[in-house]
Image 1 (cartoon, helix red, strand yellow):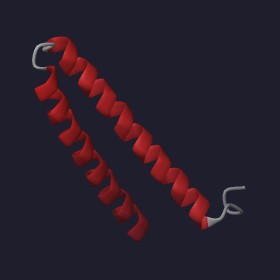
Image 2 (cartoon, one colour; image 1 turned 60 degrees about the vertical axis):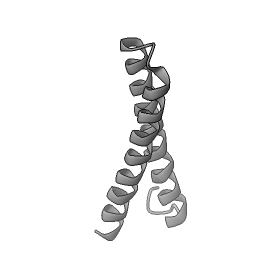
Image 3 (cartoon, helix red, strand yellow; image 1 turned 90 degrees about the vertical axis):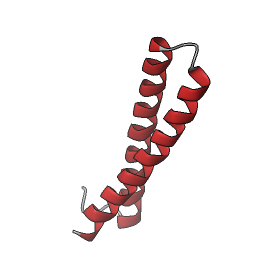
Amino acid sequence: MINSLPSTGSTNFIVVVIVIIALLSFFLKTRALFVSNPLGFFDVKMLSIYSFLYELLTSKFLFEILLIK
């Protein structure tokens, strides 16, 4: 079953899963930081946006490393 899937479809699926995981961790981090420090929410928001971008980049690099292997 897995072998019959086209390679582009399976790679797109992996990318979607990675993006969903990054989004989930982003929202969980924002919520946790907002609960612990509601007054500094906007600073926290900028920090979490940067951490979200960082996670996306690292997961993309991890994906490319897996793709090379």
